[in-house]
Image (cartoon, rainbow, N blue to C red; front, side, top):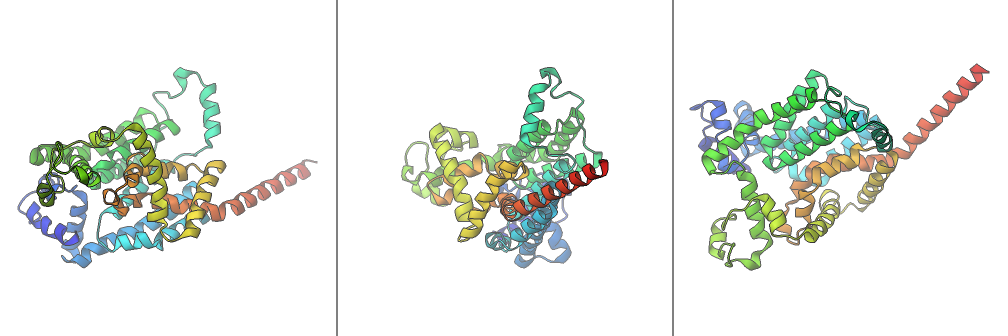
Length: 387
């Protein structure tokens, strides 16, 4: 895969014969989203074209993922939790093994963490119960005022750039970006002066990619169409040669052979609602047992303990982040009873939040206990001075 990307860079026009924007948004790279090949090109132009250099980009991005995990945990939970979570990411065997292959998962995870970090660290993330109490006390017309809370301008710019980065690396993650923006708008009561500029910047940078796909592939959403068609053929090999499926020879020549279908058709046209729910539940559990914490039973147990404890203690960044990065579609594909449908690397964007869950399981009770003890001493001191 890494060597093929390097070859495609030249074929796509990275030879200074055309403007960067024309090449970047042209829908080339064998249908691949443009930002990852562009990053490899920039790095290779400075340090040299080779498989090693492409892999080095992934390794550097994986180090950045660990660092951003430290920052996110420190800002949103506790500095000790951030440090432990970052260390767990840095030494996670599946994460390290994936990084040396020179693929894009580490880069997109950096953008996801950056998006969450610059937007959520500007707010106090209160317990859900207090939000719900406030929600029901406030009149309906005043719950989300049009001129609601506003982020600093630099956070808005960075959030828009990070959102565009996610989409330009993994076009299917436009759903993830929309869910992050939607939930933050609701939880933090963003006004239009916050969410409109973020959405406009992200979509303004990503939209030309879809135009490029429309011009070159005849389908603006080509990565999703291609992936859905491949997954259909992988999941139902016994139906090869039947109506709606390619023959064995056609499939051998092209994984996406047969009638092209949209992701919505794949998810909800080839599966019943019951299947979708069953596969999603099974896939959610499988991701942590077989992928992120494979052959690490102690960490797996600590993850589930930490996830439950984060809900009970109101550390919502952990369950929220896991839900955003895996639900609904990645968990579903992981649960499809054909392992080829879901390569393990497609779940790695959830690793930072899973690592923070493990860290919270280890550090949570001592942190809460120390905090309670300190507050108790302060109350005693105040009551003593007042007496």
